[in-house]
Amino acid sequence: MSPSPQPPIFPKARLPLQTVLIVFLVVPLVGAVATVLCVSFKNGQKTVETFTNELMADKSDRLQQQLQQYLDGPRVINQNNADAIQAEQLDELNAAKLIRQFWKQRYLFDSKKFCGSAIYLGTQQGEFVSLEQQGNQWLANQAGRATGGRYDSYIVKQGKVSQLLQRTQKVFDPRQRPWYQTARQSRQPVWSTIYPDFNQRSAEITLAQRVDNASGQMQGVLGVDCPLSSISTFLKQAKVGRSGEIFIIERSGTLVASSADDFPFSSRSDRLAAPQSQDNLIKAAAVQLNQRFRRLNQIKDKQNFDFVQNGQRYFVQVTPFSDQFGLNWLIVVVAPQADFMGPVHDNIRTNVLFSAAVLAGTIACSIYLARRIASPILALSTASTAIAGGNLNQQVPLSRIWELGALSTAFNQMVAQVRDSFTSLEQIKKRLEQRDY
Image 1 (cartoon, rainbow, N blue to C red):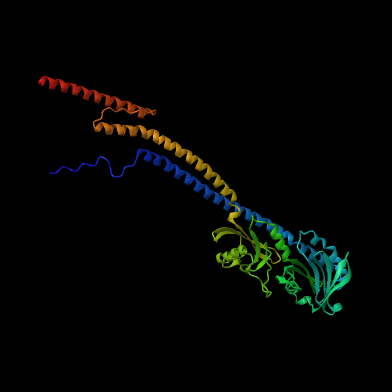
Image 2 (cartoon, rainbow, N blue to C red; image 1 turned 180 degrees about the horizontal axis):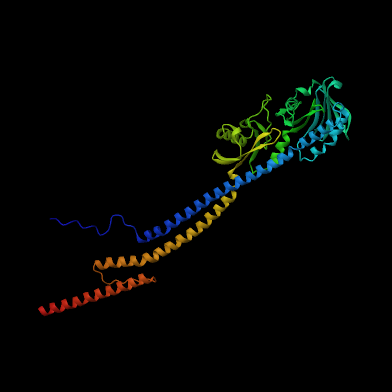
């Protein structure tokens, strides 16, 4: 029976002890540092997401409150004028008295706390009287029997009509306007649909209120115009991060106003859908909103979601806004994650630099320690190999590490004993050889 093969003295794959020590000391440390940095970054992202959602919620809540106050001025003006007409303190057919009454109420527009650009009255007979603000100028507008149905505009100074500014050739009948037709069917104030103003200069929405006499017969419709451009300015002031946007849409998905100052009508005077916005961020958020909520009417409370576009993450919050007079809008706030990741990146950068410094120091210490441990063992290995080759004049230096120092001392003693034994054997051999001769 042949003897079993003996295993080789040295395995094929040999690694220096110093390398093994360095690897086992450094690799876990590098893994731990990488894990800490990764967890720190993930926690930073979650913190940013939570903070951004809270910030957008706070913005939405403030916008709701400010919009409610901003849109409440027309209700106050209409109700005051309706009370005066019903009490016969104000004659709906007396244009001069109506202008003076409207002039007293203009301060609500001047305060900038309430929306409004015009106060007016349209009667069942087709008469129309209004007071309108254009820039820093106030105009009195009249149409009806006295103007031959044309729309005349007069400059108003100190509450008095001073001179004719413009006379249009178009026939203007208030009974054909959207605000009049909406209000005549309702017994309470009601918001009209969004429409371009008479001269196509801006988009408007009107709070209209039907006025009846004591017997319940309709006298006409009072109205206060709110230019949507004012709401856009209002939204523009409520900034979200460095590049966030806020826009308001109807449940149909059409634009009402935006911080990007989009005009809510196309060149063909059609309503502009939010995905048709000129602003890329609003367009992208609107597309995502339509994809996630097939029917915008189903949104009853705040909704949060995020999306990624061109490698950039965006947070979106949708908040319903409504009032008792028929408004049913959605306030959409969208903000890029990058606007709020600056502190997180700064923190990660600081952690990386600090970790790199600690890691470099630890690696240097590990290399030094590995050498301190491996050097005595390497000396023992070298000396053992020399002894195996017959060279007994070996002595290894003592290490400052207690265990290694003890091992070196024991090795040196063993070598000395072996050397003494060999010397004794040589002497005995020589004596025996001399005795034989």
